[in-house]
Image 1 (cartoon, rainbow, N blue to C red):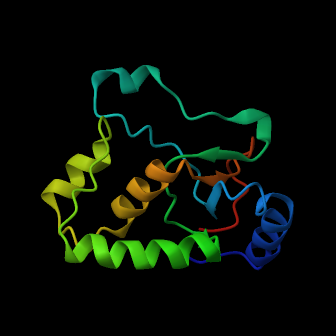
Image 2: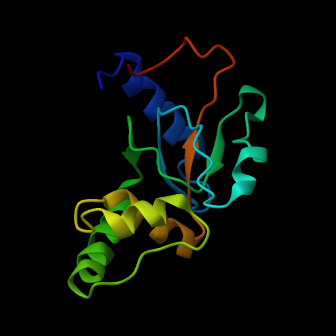
Length: 139
């Protein structure tokens, strides 16, 4: 992924505007979030919110162009080290990502650990869903 020179400006602006939102923001993502991670057949009728072109919190990490909230990230790294050492099951009921995690290298899938961590603490990643999908800060 190559990020646009505007990425840094966007992340700083997003952090200034939303980063102090009661500690609910785990990070910011450039990824156009379109994964509905439900494992059941109902996932076809559920859509990611577009939020009328306004930024929104979503409880799934967007690993592409991800900029974590430093405070949350430091705490997560401490927690993740302990969770990995103690073989903690970081499955989240109903999420397809949990199925992936069970079948892949558990130590290498940091995203599932972060999804679990966000879920337990009620955190989310901030996304922007531009109306014009051709406008991107990363390609």
